[in-house]
Length: 180
Ligand SMILES: O=C(O)CCC(=O)C(=O)O
Ligand SMILES: [Fe+2]
Image (cartoon, rainbow, N blue to C red):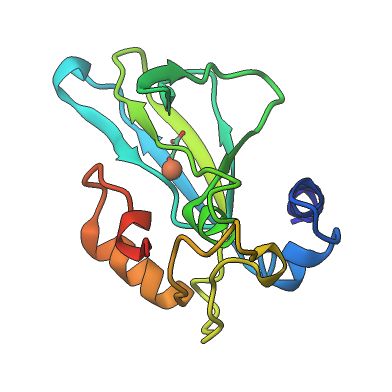
């Protein structure tokens, strides 16, 4: 949570806002963690670990063990994110992309299955989908201008999450559905 405070302060400043702006939008209000266990796989070539997706949140802080397999899509190529002792991976999620009008881009990523041994990771999602709120999320008002009109329609976290969950990790972008 403390790291989240710092990250969202830096993210706010990076797009020209007051340090507390994203925190005041409840970006740090709720954190939930998913623990993943990927068993060793005899046929990784034909087995997905976690298929391609962008996270359904503001920001994800990820701790992975030393096995590897996480990849991000960069310029249409899958790039390894090798485990680095003591390092956390920070990924932008779709909601931060939506409210920043693509200034921050969520990252498509996946995890490959592997033969070597079980892999464990802990993904911590900054996201308010477990605290019921009707708050509408759209392009941050201070960023709206003639040159920067909203690219996405306003939505609630509940609506966004329901669409994400129903769609599943089918490789398509959740954001496309909300694009104006
Ligand atoms: O296991 C990992 O390294 C990533 C998991 C992930 O992408 C997720 O939980 O959204
Ligand atoms: Fe993810």
